[in-house]
Amino acid sequence: MATQQSMLLVVRTLELLRAMNRQPASTLVSLQQETGMPKTTIHRLLATLKNEGYVRSDVVRGIYSLTEKVRLLSEGFSEHETIVEQAIPILLRTTRETGLPFAIGIAEHSHMVVRYSSMPYSPIGPMHTTVGNTHSMLDSALGQVYLAFCNDEERERLIAWHETGELSENEWRSVERGLRAQLALVKSQKYALRLPNKQHQNATLAVPVLHERRILAVLSVTTFPSVLIGAKTGELANSMARVADEVACLSITAQQFLD
Image (spheres, rainbow, N blue to C red):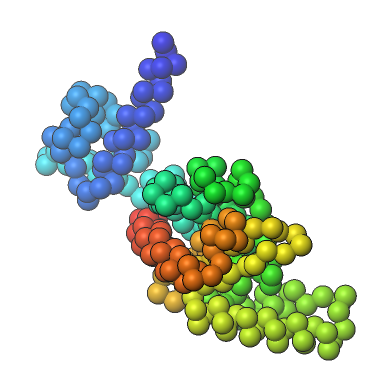
């Protein structure tokens, strides 16, 4: 019983913080309207939050507001986490509407890493999930989209990092020329398509998540080749781009609050 009461207290405290975050200043009346909690409960929670330094009050006017200390609650929650967190409900909803198995990938060091996948909820997912999968910047659809849309300095750094001593200088220059031609195509058509190969029997279509000219992440759909290849490719890429725009819009809004 005590455990349940403690859990309820935590839930109510978080709900109160969310309500206060939606407005620059709050009163007991406005918070009661926002949360539906009794005024006595709200008053006790506000007193606790004030003692801990998360809330300030104007006793004369009866107004409460959040302090700078609430920013400590978001430390360690980086832009990448914000993007993924905002993308999850959007991708899940879109998968339920279309059946397509979506994933979102983030650039980490010199690779792309899948941070969320709605594949478990798709009837045409070729595997259970792709969460945690790491993809090459050079060969994968996710990587090529990222390279095509990141800034010039980052692109050159990432390409140079992948230069391997296993190839002669001439061999590497040939690989590099082919890669740059592919990246120009990806940027022009605004998507990358990875065809089936020896390692993967499925195909992947990927599009950038962009804010202004900055790439935040990459959205992808990995499924059976017949779904992605052919006349449908461009149409699917356009649909994915609209989803990517929604993710970008919510992510930037959320990040502005954290900043």
